[in-house]
Length: 66
Image (tube, rainbow, N blue to C red; front, side):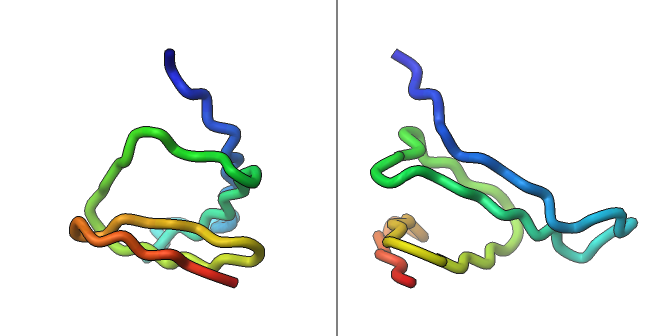
């Protein structure tokens, strides 16, 4: 059974051409999970506004808090 994520993504970069980074607001519901981990090249900036988010980086698990 495929998990349909309830994550919502909002691009915050506006109409900037060739941005150095693309700020994206990601909203998820409490208890929601991605299901299948993913990775990508580049950098991440994560700012938790409310609750706790768990990430895996280089095989280490980290809990991020507000």
